[in-house]
Length: 563
Image 1 (cartoon, one colour):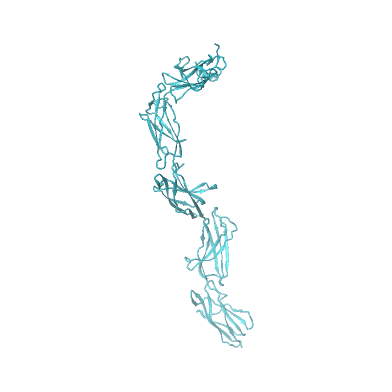
Image 2: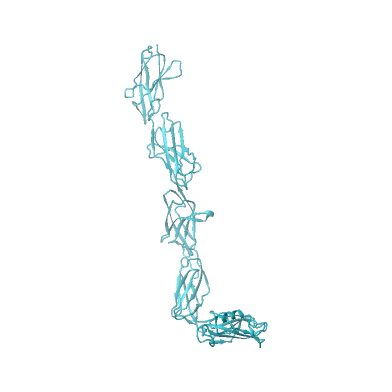
């Protein structure tokens, strides 16, 4: 029978031959449609078995695998072979996968060549298998168990246990408990535990899940008792936790703080379990500002509940958040509790400064002007800012509103003074303490000027008369009367100021100033004098030298007949 290079396995054979000297290239006859080796391999899931995948136009009638130590020198005889192949999968003997037991004296790694023959007589000899046979002890865990499979808040710890069996491929029918190999337990993408088996092959470990879904698996490893052993990873077991509902109370859902102040929120958190609602200890409570779209944007303050589920949250004023939320949540992915939220708002009233000047005139008119400004760049003026003018009898309590004045906003910038001003024709109280109060809002602080006392006493002239009447022309006229001021409900003599003297000739409608200071005797009694020139009306009133603390008085008159 003529022979030629086996084309289907040429690439793998050539490469393998270059790597492992001493092996002859696979040979096949030149019949088209002859046997072709597709694959050859061992499996740790079936120790002691070897698998060959092949095809041919005619049914395959003979398969033989030859095993050579991986480090054997050229010309070394084979360590063993097998030809007890039976069809494992495939339509018929023309194409499929065959399996056969392997019986070798020593554990180790082996190169494999495969001979194939079909019903037509076509053959392939010495086809190098693409993979070496790892003829080693296999460590398996047939009974990996997790308890509970659905952990919850009351049962958070998951216990993992199992048995490691050692399967010698020379005696696959007799697995034995493996004493001492380490076991890696995978509880997540990056989470793992380590355990070691005891003499009976048993191992155990425990963990608390840090995420809701857990893909649990385990893999034994080689040890001094099982050097080079192959550890088989168990199939993944899908566990999941129960996330329990949470509820909480809060002493307030809104804080209006002055700039630099700290607010406090207190409350109690509970979690619903199979035993009912119970305190939720050692869990996070925080205020979080909401960003665009209503999603949590930035943290403002946080604390944790105590052993009884109670909390005290101190909220600073550094980060105002009109739109925020109170959140109770567990750490990380919180696998055992659902987050709970309540709406919250934090307004910060930025500090403002205010100044005022005021003057009470002697005609009882009242003039006031002032300014208000803020410094923080985050502050802004309300739509219609105002100042309230207030007065009080003692400057400490009992403040009454006199008027509300608009603030004229011209700059609308930090550190720029915005002004207010007004003149009142009469004052509601001519002896009081006055102040200006800026009417802030939750975002701009209220501010008040220091009280300033403004007072003027009412004055009057009583018993005014001119004598003699009638009087001869050129003779003196004397003026009498009492000059007084009102202190509370009592009229008292006024000696520190002097009234003005006026004269209106008979037939005229106009008074003329005669003297801006009528003499008095130091006790409030008038002691003035003038020369009689013509008939007319004489008048006195305090309206020229009122000083700082007296109101003008009404004019009092007396007619004198000059002859």
